[in-house]
Length: 254
Image (tube, rainbow, N blue to C red; front, side):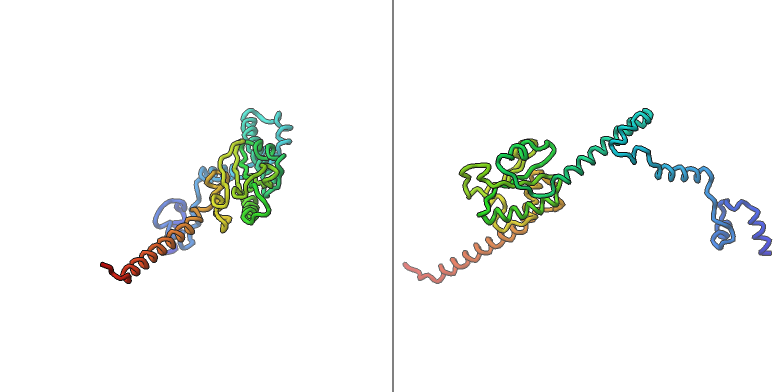
């Protein structure tokens, strides 16, 4: 009786959406439900489109130029867009190969390397003296940042080669340029971050100006400032307490 039932079910459409067919599929008596042909064809076309690679996507800029006449109008537009994309990638690669380090320049190179740098390039220049410890610390931090942000141009110069009679109290001096204009400046130890300056703090300063895009979520100096404020408040409270205690111990003179 059971065999007859199964045979009868097998004669039905196995792709029919019935509760009985679902039970038979569950126990392996019926094969999995077949997908409609149009759905299969659509999936195949979609997969083919995903793996399809246009000929020009495998070409470099020179090959694109040589094969330009072989493309139709639609391809020419796509090729032009692709060429611009490749050109931007190439420029970015060239820039990364060109920068990525803190370079030493002289005063004679200032205009060429800093003022006349490409308009889309941020330039950070450090004017320093080797006799000032804070300058050496800034150079060390800028070297790290130059490697981390190779799209920006980091340079340093002995201040005497750029400006005569520049006061030591103004060092270190960090100037930030874009399109030939000064966009930010940090002059002296205090503005540069103090003698205990950390590289993250300098990174934040440059990011605030816009020279680099940092991944820091908040000012690393904030915690230090909060601690100093709290310490100052505690000191003031302690001094007030001592003053009040002294007043109590003073003899009352009438």
